Length: 119
Image (tube, rainbow, N blue to C red; front, side, top):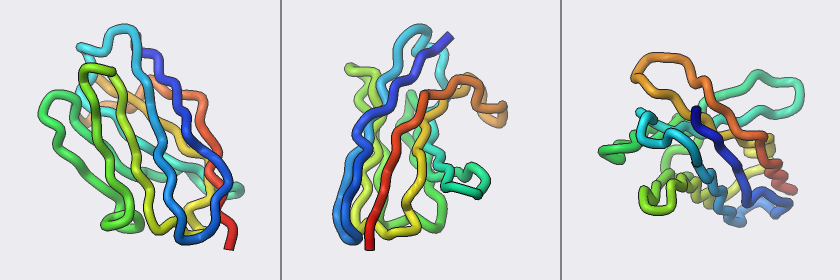
């Protein structure tokens, strides 16, 4: 089993930047990739970005492409989400999640961190 802990959320103004961290522990060697998801009030959870653990390939939702960057530090077992040019519509609880196989469900989730962007 993998345990995930997010940090780095906060209250910022539109146009500001934030960096979220997702620290992984446990059976990290079994991870295929780690993804970031977000859920705004009254909306469904949506995919933001993901990175494969071994090769570092990255994938983004169109809504954040060019503004957000996902990266990893394998030595620290940590994945980062650098968020630039934040918009009020980026306001949500951000979660990181891990899965062991491509195409499978993300079955390990962190507790989430709140990001609020004021206009």
